[in-house]
Length: 444
Image (cartoon, rainbow, N blue to C red; front, side, top):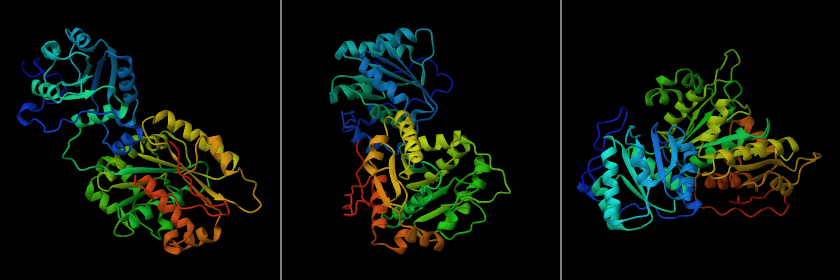
């Protein structure tokens, strides 16, 4: 049987790869059942799939459900994926009179000559350039190799998990030789004044200094951003210039706009002026952040407490989310709303982290930590006590907490949270006896 794809190329279809038989892999990348945690850790920074059309023809409802859940993932946001039943015969019938999409996924429970006869019939109706992924129920290396030899682009073993589907599609459409993209960590306050920016800046500092990774902190609060103040910098240019003309952004312009705070830490500062009107656009924000994350392994995104289309898009597109709250009713309500939104919109990602800040403020009635966790549906990753002296001194001096009190509990907590956000193994420090300060590992 000749390779799949015999009809004339469809408009916009990608070129057919060289026959896999020329370089058969020694160990086929069959998709094995793994735990959700394993999937999340390995796929947290997959590059988004480009704008392609995908049709899936399934035989089992569970397979269709897994592919449908994958289609709702942020990494497939640009792709158009539809799920049908009918397997390979259904696909053959569907494409008798219509052009095939960029990618066809077909499920089958058969093997041997009958399977390859069906694949041959599918090849007859496929446009040149259409890629084919077969979902089977036999984990057989020889079967995989024969499929690849016949022109199938990938073979997945059922049962599928959504992230396994996303990884398989990404392998087909993302250049394997392209440099990896950086992890984005978005910080947002449950309300104004929770200290979200302070947390973001200190975490960025910890990742760069304690974990020796290159970090860019992007201050998205254009009129009131404090990143420049917190790092004792006063840049003439910054992120506003990039957002004004995102189409001009390249590595040269990015280097000119960034402020170097240390060997490993750079700042994309906000202008923090009120004589300009800033029109924030979701697509411009996405373009600028995509360019930034191509150059560094970690991008800290400091979001203002403003709910707008661009804020929502940047937040939900991040690899990790940190919500900073204080132990009061408004913070509890808002934190729960943000958590519920992220859980619904990002079913295949880690749950957002909660930082409960300013706990134990004298004479202020507070919601107990345990009650706060029960109300929002999850424990806080980090709980910080009210410490105006330490944090006030750091803010006024343009320093980070670790620079002032490197062996203190707050610095220890920031290092722990930084490790959690970067996927590093870390043991939570022991809680202080006073119960005003503790570190709670996030569940789930």
